[in-house]
Length: 78
Image: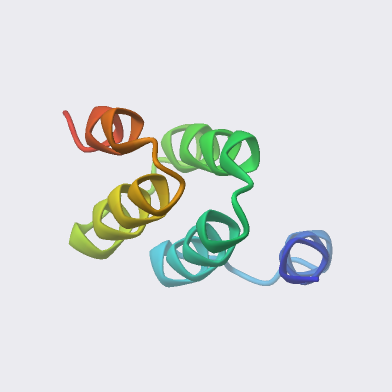
């Protein structure tokens, strides 16, 4: 559901920012959709949107919840 809303926002030209991405990343992490999360992280980079502490926290927590703590810490490395 959140992914569809995000796509609709982008399609309609609504400006998305790091808060939008963080919300989506956290929701996807909670659902275990790590491939989509990795895709969003690449989108952040392509859109020149800088991740913040909340972004990294969502990534680490989401990966740890899925027992992928090494992947979560990999995301947090510059």
